[in-house]
Image 1 (cartoon, rainbow, N blue to C red):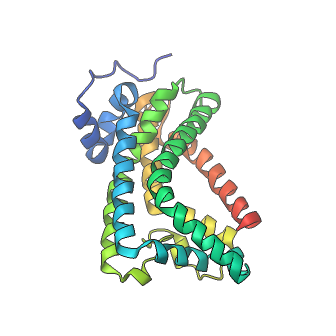
Image 2: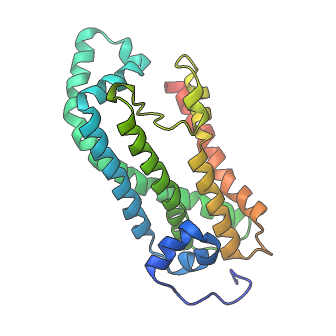
Image 3: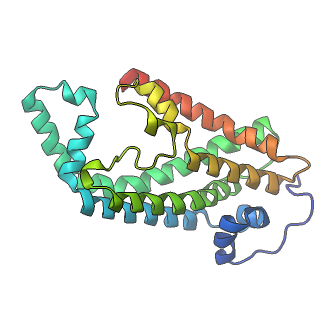
Length: 247
């Protein structure tokens, strides 16, 4: 099954793919899908996350990070003092490992699961005829521009605000959850936090990518956008349900 309306252009350099996805995504998404290296995109985003994590630890410190996390956890607040102290000591031992290892590992898991979900929707519901690696490439590269901008903005806020005022859960006021009071129900806060500008940016880039790779006649942008939103909505609802049950 042909995936494009015409023969795909010859492969370009990796630098061309990386700059193109930021400035002219429609011109490079076919090349990204067929010749991209998803692990390069993963590595770039993982480095950005690690750089921010290092700066946040240096600026705020593990003790303050744990204290803030405990203050926003209702179950932790209900614990007896001795159990809370044990939990604090455990967190103090595990957090240096957790903040270094879990973000890149979690990012990899998210990329693989999201690519699988998108592949299911586009192949079985929209008859796109894509391969898993193509979808993984599209998802990975589409995450680069939002990651660069959001990381830079978050680092700026990190150093503009006093350490005690930095909100680790919502450092940037680019989602509705940042404007809700602390007393808001966890499930509602989860839903509101999902309405995020950078997430919408990646969704739009993915829709452009799928439309470009499949061909605008077979897969117009509006149809591709629906295909991207379907698994995202499933994730948002699952996350809100989890927050309602265990938040």
